[in-house]
Image (cartoon, rainbow over all chains, first blue to last red; front, top):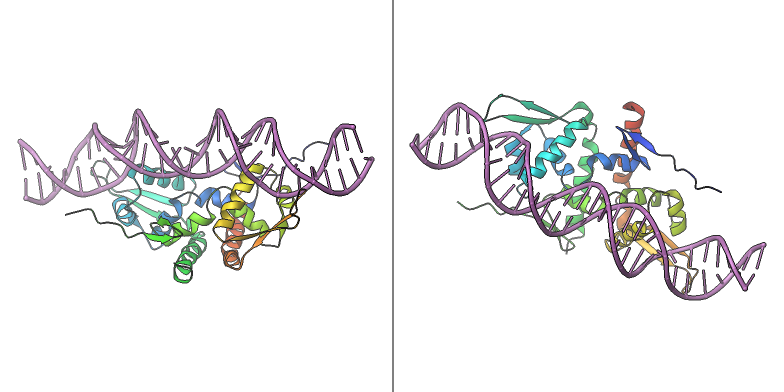
Length: 118
Length: 118
DNA sequence: GCAATAACGGTCAAAAAGGATAGTATAGAT
DNA sequence: ATCTATACTATCCTTTTTGACCGTTATTGC
């Protein structure tokens, strides 16, 4: 008897053991849902995002923004080619399909704080 | 002018910058939503979970189960005090409040596979 | 009597994620 | 002329997460 080869799901070259982990592969991590939570309400510049997320470092923020862009979740628009730049981030149509999830994730956090707080 | 001290949310001794990250602090990581996805449909023994998740190592599975238990999301019931043990895992009432989120996370994964595949 | 099963825990190592800090280019304000 | 703001990138480093692999206990089945 050999090991059963588990049938994996594939998306964008990555493999996932189940549909839930595919989603988490895209919105998982410490900061991605926070970014999406803020972009859900509309376009934001890089500096505006930073103000809303004061505890993330610039490096981490731009890394996360880049991978969200690569995954087709957000748009990046540059408004001047030379510094000082103006760059705006917004959800793509594909990214907007995540809004219900992000909203329910945020709601659950609020719910927990209200009902299970020390 | 001093740095504005960002107001943090606190839950179970951990700090989060926003309600969305609180939720992710509990269901984030590579395996937790997969565990919850399987437990959503009912109680499972440790060995049954393993069969449903063949690509996770035993050590990681028990670590994740332990932290989910510590966070009050799942119950652990032991049925014999001496080996071979029988241990069953199930969602707590608190854990059940996560079902809509886990379901929508799983649904989005399916949706992506159907509509945006390779 | 020996292997398999169950549900882990321990140790070590690798990989992934995240943070600290500094640097860059240039326009506009002071 | 200097300073500040913008949106990053580059190093370097630490922390967290995950994996590989082996050991443990006791009962059941062959």
